[in-house]
Each structure stands twice: as structure tokens, then as C-alpha cells.
Image (cartoon, rainbow, N blue to C red; front, side, top):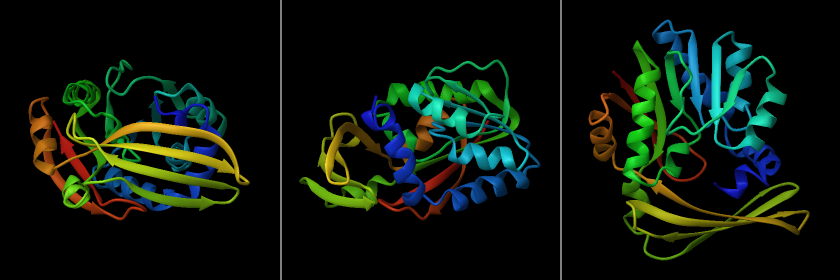
Length: 236
């Protein structure tokens, strides 16, 4: 698992509150729930609970799971009334269904093998109510890989933290790349995160969903702080 979500969980929490527009993210999911008069929501990859807090404050029956125990601990502290479990999005079993299941924060990028994605989609299908929606955001492989042939570097500063990242193409398991990031606090090195991430083409996601009993109904463009991505909306 990514070090960012374990040893660096508190750093993630502080940096991403400024990198992600959680109010705008929540507004999108809130509208989707209202459109179908839905009340229950399951968030896969709930992180430190930034969206969980907004769902609960608005009165939704909210559950969340995350693979990182460190993230779950912070999320439970932030949103005591939420139901949050440490679990794998590929193999969770919660014993109930939900009106909406969402994978947020482009977390599907960490499922670099088709087998893992199919396991995740199969788990989603088991937990989705008959008229429920499944929504996730994914990075678009087209614009990312059209000229991505060598290592790229970038720097992000969210005081007191600084992140220096290197992205290197690695097509072993799909439209994937290796992402290595060094984190600094007040210019003192505090940790390194190394992980392989995956981007997707729309048609491969559609096929993976069909194979696992899900129907893609809509793709919506999404504004993001890095990389072009989109929302995918599906149902049974």
C-alpha cells in the first residue's frame, strides 16, 4: 500500500484539503443522490473522511471503507457518527446494499490489474440496490499517454509541506506509470511514497463493467488539479 496513506496519512490529510475541492466534489455526488431520491451511500477509498463529513452533515446514511488503518482512524475521529471500516475495495462484505456506491479521489487508479478491477466491480454489484448508482472518477489515458515517453517531474507546495514527484511510464499492466514522491516539512525530508498508478480508456472500463453485471450509462467531464479525468456513472 502507498506510504502516503499510512505513515504519511496526516500529511495527506492536510495537503489534499487544499489540492482537492471537497465542496465541489460533494456537490456533484449530492446532486446525483437527489436526482434518484437516494438516501444511503457507500464510499470506497474514503480516506480521512473529508467527504464523509459532508455526507453525514447533510443527513445521508453514510458508510465508508478504506484499506489504510491510519486513514480510517483519522476518518473516525473527524466523523464519529459515520460508519467506517478498514477493508479492501476489491473484497469487502458489509451485509447490506446502498442507493449509491462511489469510488472517490481517483482511487481506482491503484487497481492496476484487470483482475483487481473485476473483483472490485463484482463486490460493488453485490452491494448495490436494484435501482442504485455506481459512480467513480478515473484518469483519462488518452491525453496522458499520447506523449508520455519519459520521466516527468512536478512540485507542489502546501505550507509547511512540499512534494517533489517523478512519473515514469511503465506499461506492464496497462496504461500505468510509476509515481515516486518525496515529502518535506519545513524543508526537512519526512518520507517517500512509491506506487504504480493506472489510467483508463473509456471503452476498457465499459467492457470491464459489462463483464461484471454493470451497465455504463454516462461519462461526465470533471475538473481536476492534475491529469484529465472524468466521472463514470453505472447501474445494474
